[in-house]
Length: 434
Image: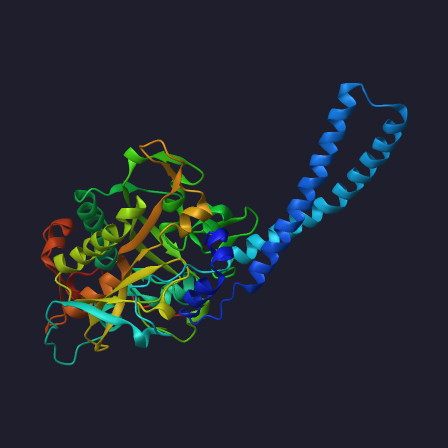
């Protein structure tokens, strides 16, 4: 979250920055409530101060009988006022904190203005678009090859769930291992976190309270299925003070991810693009503030390295202020080419959050010079979304004979197999739902 002192002292500048997001955000109510909190806090402190003064007077034993009665009456009145003011103060603080948690991060000055994706800017393109005559969609290939079973996914759960069969399952696993191995070789320490997290974790990274209802929740235990490994990994060091010598910390993690996709009704209803459950390898960094911009660029390059190793054409986009996620101050999207759609589709988002998440999760480090603890800067990026990567491979590497050529870097993970062929898939009977 933002520093309330910065909002208080720079209201106009903060509001102008928030206006760039085109989300209708306003800090006026927050500033007004914050003023009430400070006034009420001051009143409470004055009452407590006076109460303590009276206690000290009694301790001296030099209070006359006449003064004693007056001070007792004043003490009674002070206690009554404190009883009245304390719940008021708590209520105001809770309201202020909720408003503060509902304000997004301020966009970095370097990113473009704009209200939506139409204002995003392509900053890089890589690879050659494959020349495929009448390319098939990945879901058509998946059905023909017998490796993606959408109907049985619906039978087992509901729409937007899929069963991967045979080489589909093996490819998913191969991609996961390849991504983790490549990132591990670059110094990312692997983490395998819980996929159920408590509410504090969701608040810490900015999913809650703003997006309440967008996630799968186990009501009885008040736990959430992770929407991304960013949530548990970023919260690894919540409420801790690290030493400067421990930074930077780079982690990578594989988890399944769960999202309701409530705001995506009607989008990508076919295929393996927008699932309620999907697999992803995530990159998370904890760094010193003056290095976060450089670390952001390096993280994005690490995600791009996966696409380049798989020889998938992609482009990098810097998101405009109006299209950026709630917690990010700057974000790059990586988009991979889908031949059947004739367009690029997002496969990774790499974000620099500054100290926004650190303030929410109380993530700090102690400078080597002995100064006061400072908030860490956090970053995260998809490295990559595995399902979308598999779908992109199927479309970009489809062959005239109906097979799919496996990228060379994955061949060792698949026992030397070079193609996905229909004849090699286990003969699974087609689903006949009645």
